Length: 320
Image (spheres, rainbow, N blue to C red):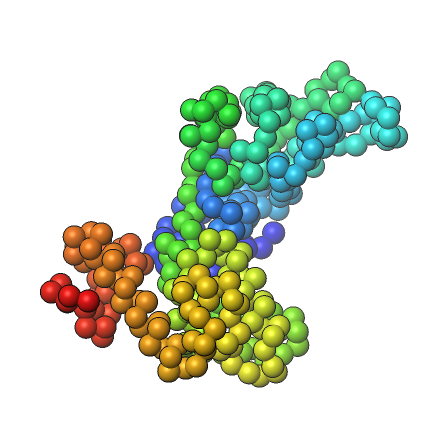
């Protein structure tokens, strides 16, 4: 498979990509952690595509989407006649991934019984189809992902400690989009280009005022939510038009405190400047005006922060 397209400019995602490629040199299990929508499967595909198994299957399964009663037959397969409806032999997902990579998405959603069955497969490197007695050897690399804090789940007794240490030999944490705001502009342009081409349109520009709004929103749904927003904006725009702030959804506008009447360019600009100033001052106060830590928190360079302080006239003695 070709290397998946991961779009970024931030140092944080650069570190994720570099680490993923280093992990690809081994066959050790990988645990990818991150909030929903951060791109965990994309990073898993990068690990697979960058390693020696790249020409072999990459099989993804959403652990939370498999009903408890079907878990064994789906993952391990079954023999004809093993149960009502089993009219033929069927290999499971682990066998389908033999020689390649199995991606166990949302592994934290597995029940205790399913966790125990997965652990046995990972330990023994073999599966037994439902209705059979003879185990089958498999050779798969396991990449698991979760949006839960598995250490906390483990301490609470909801996730097996032995399974956690089995899947977490290598760990990779994907930062949420709000912690790498410099990626918003390049991701927005990437999605706008892709959806415009799907619609047979020229690639639109994104207005600076719209980008300012997008960069101020916290994106709780992360990259997936941003993609959805840009798709919506492109779909509602006219042929060849610029994507302006008036196309941004009310959900995003409410999320940064914009009122319906703030769509006028002059008023919008004033509101954005005021909000940006408020965020920077709050962050400076949080870190006792330590500009290095403030810049890091805001996803800026120290020089970039100094430029904003000068442009927005933010001073430590500023009473406002």
